[in-house]
Length: 348
Image 1 (cartoon, rainbow, N blue to C red):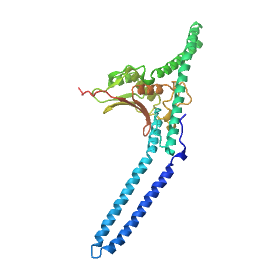
Image 2 (cartoon, rainbow, N blue to C red; image 1 turned 60 degrees about the horizontal axis):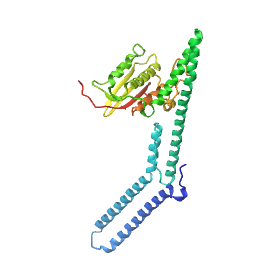
Image 3 (spheres, rainbow, N blue to C red; image 1 turned 90 degrees about the vertical axis):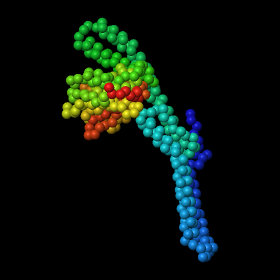
Image 4 (cartoon, rainbow, N blue to C red; image 1 turned 90 degrees about the horizontal axis):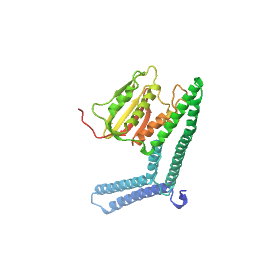
C-alpha cells in the first residue's frame, strides 16, 4: 500500500499561495515607498538640475522592478501548479481508455496527495478490468467441454424442429465463446501476422460482400497505394464489422454508408460513416465494452452478442492504432480507425 505524506509535514498549496501573494505585495509596497523617498531626495539634492529627467529614470526603474516581480511570481505559480496540469493530462488519458497512465507525484502538498490517490484509483481500475477479462476467459474455456457434449447428444437425438432450434442455439453459444477467446488471443498484439499491404484493395474486397444491401456502400480512396503494416485478415474483420454495423442502423431514407481511406504523414485513416440515428451520448463511452449494446432489448433483429466492436478495438490496438467513434451532424455516426502508415508509393 502506498504511503501518503501528512499535510502537516509540508507547506500546503494554500500556504504557499498566501506566502507568494504576501511577498509580492510587500515588494510592491516597498518599491513604491523607495520611489517616493527617492523622489523627495532628488528634489532636495538636485537644485538647478533637470528634476523631470531624474523622475523619469526613477519611474523606469520602478516599472522594471514591478515587471520583474510579476514575471518571477508567474514562474513560481506555474511551477507550483505543474502537478495540477499533469493530473489534468492523466484524467484526459484515462477518459480515453489508457489504463497505463501514471501521474507524477512526490510534491508532498495537496496536489501530491491527489496524484497518489489518482494513481491508486487507476491501479484498482486496471485490476478490475483484468479480473473481468480473466473471468470471461475462464468461463469461455469451461463452457467448451459441456458444449461439445451437448453437440454429441444433439446428434443422437431424432431430427425435427426441436433439434434444429437447439442446434442454432448451440451454434450461437459456440460463436460467442470463439469471439471471447479471439479477444484474449489479440491481447498485447498476439495472433497477428503483420506485413506491408495496400489497404485500398482490402476495402474494395470487403465492400463487395455487401453489394445489394440497402442503402449501399461506397469507397472513397485516393489514387495510388495506401500501404500499411497490417494483418489483412484482421483488418477485413474490422472493416466488415463496422460496415455491417453501419448498414444495420441505417434508416430507410439514409444515404449510402461511406468508407473513406486517407493518409496524412505517417498515419493511415479509415472512416466508416452512416446516416443513421447516431449513438446516444450516454453510450459513447461504453460502446466498445464487451457485451454492451445500444439496443437494450438484445433482440434478434439487431443480432450479435455485443462483442463485435470490442473485437474491432482489440484488433486495431493490437496493430498499435486507435479506434474512435463520434456522432455526425445532423445525424449519423462515424467510426475512425487510425493506423501507422507504411512508406509512400508514387501514383502510377
